[in-house]
Image 1 (tube, rainbow, N blue to C red):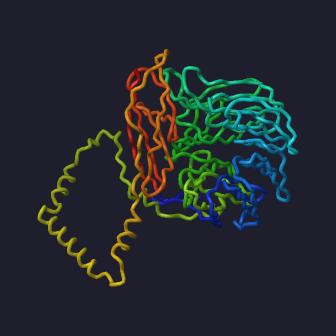
Image 2: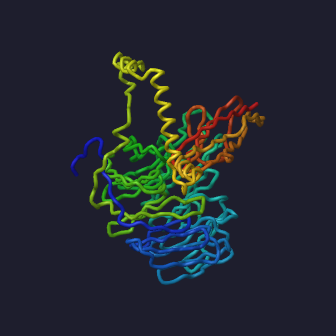
Image 3: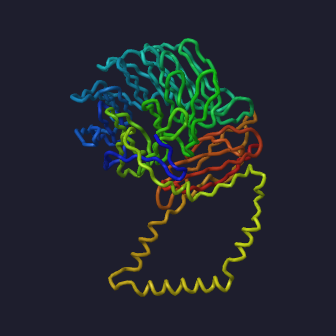
Length: 504
């Protein structure tokens, strides 16, 4: 690939685009095509050209799903577990209130609202069960012999396929922890991403990856710059995408490598012909193992998932739309012809290297001279008068059929109003016998006047990212603590609100 000029970016174009008239709950690659699910029970299948080949509908809402090869398993709000293939649909279980499903070639794992993990076969016959509490992540090993489960309290447990416990890793007793991701289990090896609130100041990293083996247990702990959002195994190591946009390569016993920083949370990773396909915000990128960007593709909406469809095609699935409106899927060929476009952002951006000691922050003599050549106050008044006169002429030249309010409304609709961040009022709480207090930070009153909030970020006074939900829980020691809530709307506008908690 020939190198492109600094102000030119490499792009590719979509081979097809698919519009659906509902918000996509989940999507899966199946065969050479893909299937999309809506919350109300709709299931539409498409081929890799984006042509719909079938539609299906179940009578209740879909609450959980998973796919493996040609099989799709869904659970309805009625409590039915349904196994779907290309040619059949079979209800294999009833009366189970599921909130999660994980399927392999040999077994199906169901997590229930009562905190149970239930193992069943493809006929719906129960094999084993265990109660763990609220489950957040389930992984089944490539040989179907081990199962790794994470719960919302930050506990990780390894089972055999009879749900007999092999290993267990509880959260720290003096902190609030959560498990944010678990890699696939390959030959007994996997990594776990943990995030703690850092309520206790010590040497433990707030964001870390744990190398595990199902028999040998915990092997190594590595600190990472922000919470891991997706993990992809590759050879002897892992590609890791992070909440703050970092793309990492990590191997056991070696320093991690920062391949790129994309600036926005990475939502999915896939391996493609030795390179990495990465989705972040509105963009998909192909990046080499050395961190070189080969192309960038801009999607009309935020990308939530990358599906590998076969025959050289992938699908970029738009994020779930909380407004309930339609979703868009773009089909692209990562190996297709690259186009070169002028990078206006790079051309127009002005970057000052503050590490250069010659940069003082003060204007140079040449800049002062140019500033002196600017218009005088009288000249500026004249310009303003000219502008007002041109506005008056424009208003009088409107046709009789044109509605002024309608014209102004059209102009106003093109303006994006920023979101309103609301971190809540300053509060004082009483500590417990351990001189600590569990505090709920509630930013749910934040809103966007002309769109929706798509990103939340709670940040401590030390700059640590504590969570990405409207409401989070923190454990605090006695003293005064400050927090910032940053929200971003669907057009990229950002707003920040601050609040203080006093623990006595």
